[in-house]
Length: 278
Image (tube, rainbow, N blue to C red):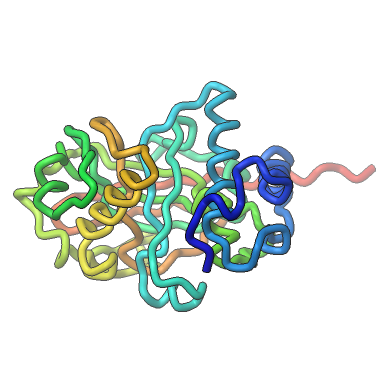
């Protein structure tokens, strides 16, 4: 697996072609073929270069970065995709959805939902190597969150290269509104249930996220410092799924409850009416 960004420069033809394929899917709402055929096999640096290019385009359109998400925090999913490390993607302001507000169907391609712990930072995390204590000290509060993951790649036919290039399959996210101090939480043992109209569709606990959601935040903080863009005060960090992804259908209302953090709801609009073929 390639680990040096110099192996595939950001401006290379392969990176540009992969970015254009994914961006066209975003703009048209039509999922695309995987991008792994355009990039060197297993080259995560090339995939992150695609992600950087696409994020840069969104920022140039007037968006702003609100934080970061950590993905691939489950060892089982890592094994499935052939990697031994998490990944990350950028959160943008236009992907934040208020608690319970309806997200139009189609706003996220091929959506699925995950319940997560979100950390909102009060201080920067600029060190080369962080500890859990550093993260606790830097965190203003935690919130329950539902991440609405989505894939621009048709039928979720993804490898690690595809999901990294596609901004870690980021779609949208919903935060709860009752901030809780970390001193009042044990995130490792916090249980989670994600329900659809009262029926459980995913269950888990903090230990499923790299052993503790704080471990995921430490990994992200260290990784972003190495890349020259450390976590800053005000950033929101989605630390990773506490249980399996749940399927989503038009009109669904999902509610996640996490012990000690309370609940948060993600609501989806109805499918658009079919166009008259006449």
